[in-house]
Amino acid sequence: MSLQDLLAAVLVVAGLLWLGIGGLGILRFPDFYSRLHPAGKADTFGATLVLLGLVVHQGLSLLSVKLLLVEAFILLANPAASHVLGRAAHRSGLVPWTASGKEGR
Image 1 (cartoon, rainbow, N blue to C red):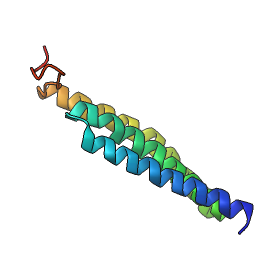
Image 2 (cartoon, helix red, strand yellow):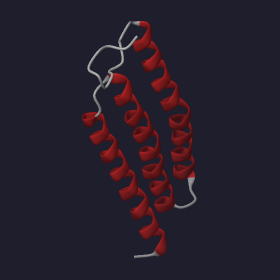
Image 3 (spheres, rainbow, N blue to C red):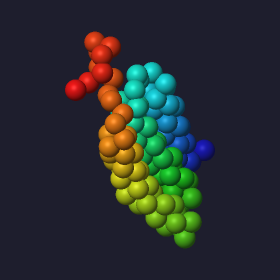
């Protein structure tokens, strides 16, 4: 196994672990707004690590350029989508959870 393959495997496994931890965060947090945070972060960073691992594994080629373009789209679209979801929930009247068990505001 070459150093390049080892680095690619480490990046892919780290990305999968990050996605798994984000999924656990989605299950553990109490309301939509707090679940939105691990969903957005895990998606963006986990996918980044996996795609970078694939780029390292592939080497310099047309496929790695395409993978980097997909990554650029993910880096632009995921934060914007999280923001839009949170804003839509807020505008529709979804009230955030509070520790006292009472609704906010």
